[in-house]
Length: 211
Image (cartoon, rainbow, N blue to C red; front, side):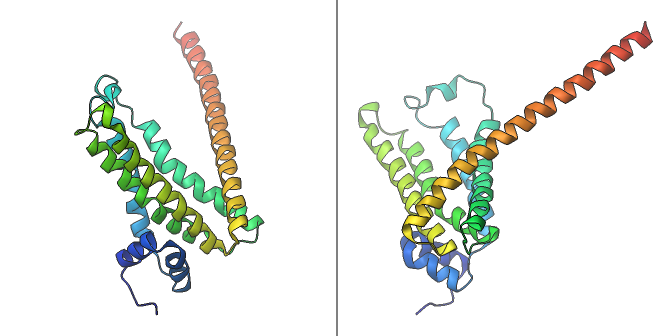
């Protein structure tokens, strides 16, 4: 029997019972976009925490390099948004039943173990030596693969695919992400060249006017 649960209870239900949890959430049309936004924010925070902090032996570069938040923003928020767009694009071609909102919510919920694993492994790195790095790696990998499992069952429930078709959809989504990111980089490069072209013309005109 499915009870009326709060958004946080639905999140807990999905995390520990992914197969029936996602199906129940789909049937009840549950899932909070607000909680999803908070999760993605914490994904960014966890990536910053992992890149900037941690034990000196595990992350010496963080204590010497100038910190740049842009790559981390890309590796967290931009990757997530690209995943949602690419998955929605391919699911429409493969007769998936999920809409963009559902994909965004189910995908965000699946990221929770990865976020927790990333933060916990960073904290552990303060207390263990390099010889004991197996503990840092283990926590990080458990969080990662738990999220992978949640993502698979989330997309399966979201689109009502078979297991095989879900794997195919995920592979196509990853390829789609690469294509989208490539096009974005290409467009940014093009806009930069156009801007430099007009800026050069403007500079030349102003030079001639003043001379």
